Each structure stands twice: as structure tokens, then as C-alpha cells.
Amino acid sequence: MRKFLADIQLKSIIKNFESSKNKQFLTWTNIQKIALVLNSKENINKSQIDQFIVKLQKYVEVYYVEDQAKAATYADWQSVLKHDLNFLHLPKSTLLHKWHEKQFDLVINACNEDDAVAQSIAAALQANFKCATSEKVKDSNLVIKRSVNNKTIDYLEELVKYLKMIKN
Image (cartoon, rainbow, N blue to C red; front, side, top):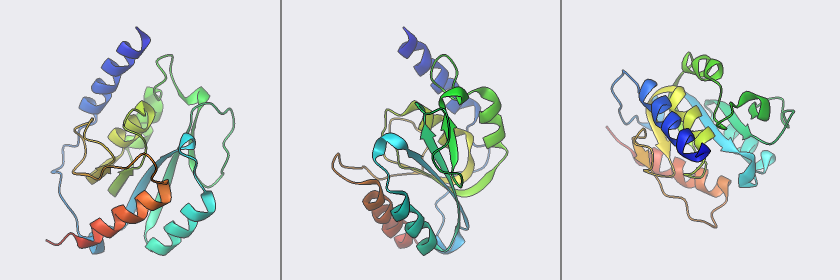
């Protein structure tokens, strides 16, 4: 029952935060601000992710889902902790509205398609261009499937390779 209610609330969150702006593909040179949504369950290597971010030469904010933790693991990433979630295990509305005030050129949700917290974050963040690993939520412009054995860093590097191929 709780999962059913969470799915309904997730659909509502996505609908409420649907961008009023036109969704559009952006060329890599036009992308300056990136939001990256990651989950601690994905076995993240922070050092590799930090090196990847430096290599991008773009402004990047990381939203890190640590839904079982009471304290943030990394101070320089925006962590979503256990106390940030409501009884349906979705981000509290105050956080969603706070994130909605931010504007990015690109939002990358590198999390599993069943990660409702990550989907909520990606939906709340404003961007004309959104990428995800699944078509499950119809909020993304570009979907690059992620294989089961694919590490997060490998997925991100592959995604950026495709983003650099986009021409106007």
C-alpha cells in the first residue's frame, strides 16, 4: 500500500514540477551548469566522480541520495538523508521547492529507474535539458540506458560522449 501511495505522489511531484520552459537539446558548448543525481547504493567512487567533474570544466552540483544515513558522507555534495524524506520515502516538499528554485542547463539522473527519490530530485530541478537512465518517467529529453554491470563513472563518461555529439 505504501509503495502504491508513493508512486501516486511521485507522479504528482513530476507533474507539479514539469518545466514550463521548452525542453530542448543543448550542444555541449551551451551547457554551463549541470546537476548530477547519484545514489549511495550505486557503489560510487567519489575520487573518480570528482576527477570526472574537474575534466568536464563545467559548474556541477551533485545531489547524493543517502536515504539510510543520518549524516552526510561528503560535505561538498548535497546529500539527501533519511530525515529529508517523508513517510512515503520521498523528499519532503520543502526540499523539493528549494531545489526547484535552482536553474541548470542540464540535469543528469544517473540512478536506477526505480529510485523514486532520485526521480523526485531530477523532476524538481529546473533545466531545459534532462538526461536519465530510463523512460519510466517521461521527464527526460535524452535516455541512455544503463546496463546492469555498468559502473556509474562508465555510464557518465558514455553519456558525456553522446552529449558532445549533439549538434544544432
